Amino acid sequence: MTTSDDFRAAGNPMFNSNKLKLGVFGTNCSSACAITTAESTFEPTFEHNVEIAKKLEAAGWECMVPIARWRGFGGPTNFNGVNMDTFTWAAALAAVTTKLQFFSTTHIPTLNPIVATKMATTIDNISKGRYGLNLVTGWFTPEMEMFGVPMMEHDTRYEYATEWMEIVDTLWKKNGVTYDGQFLKVKDAFSEPKPYNKETGRPVLICAGSSGKGLHFTAKFCDFNFGFMQDMESGAAWVKKVKELAREEYKRELGTFTACPVVVRETEKEAQDYYDYYVNQKGDWEACENICEVLQVQSQNHSAEMYQKFKERFIAGWGGYPIVGTPEQVADKLVALSNTGVDGALLTMVDYNEELPFFNDRVMPLLKQAGLRN
Image (cartoon, rainbow, N blue to C red; front, side, top):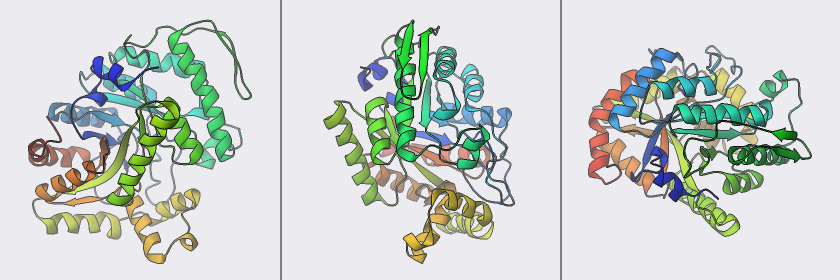
């Protein structure tokens, strides 16, 4: 069984000695993670993504994680409606970088496990081991129906994903694989090349499963559970829960990652004013309502105040925990985030290429001083 020590020995960026790993989220999609009509130079093009990757690599960030999207969410922006495939995206970026880790987010029901195995190991070899899969079972019904199959019931999706993962994991190790499952069947399957690092035998795996079935799937197969924090207290409880589950049930160490929209400016007023501008004044509320309806974040299940906060956070950055303020305030909030025990954060911005230089120049040195970064 592959362990975190195996990835650490292989020099994988996700297992380096930085206490708080950092990455960015969603740069392969239009509007990335901010559901807003606010002005931005960002475009979901290969050229823009190369610029972002170079800035991240120069400043020592760990990873880039894309969003698997097949259609937009409507509204004035048709949020995420323009999007790059996550496998070819990762292969192209891996070829022009040397340090960053790239993931391919995949909707498991849309991809044959033999095809997934081949594509993943191809990119893993291109990147020399700087690659991983973000495993998603699919939740946006109109997307899944595009493929001519009905949306599976929630727990059934994870039963299907378990068979899929068992086939892929076995094919990473050997050839001549035959599998006769309830959902999936393969006969005498082969896949070459094998993963790049012999120490690990596979790419890094992450999953955002948060239900009972989802957490058990993640604890059994993956290296990181990806979750959204409402606040620091509940975040610490989530980290404790998933790590204990992995240790007690599967004798494995499971890391954790969360997401945070970040606005950092010279003064607190500038940061708060911009957050208010892109979220409350320029937010694409129609697209946000469409997402909340699919996710069943309904007002009757929460107070009006809580419902409004949910929607604001979706607009700010796909529901992540907002971090807004001066460089010093942002650094302090990231220290507090790290104190929950979380291993890393995917930071989201409205305009990555415009905002990253200031973050790298002013916040990263403070994180180093605080002992979060080497």
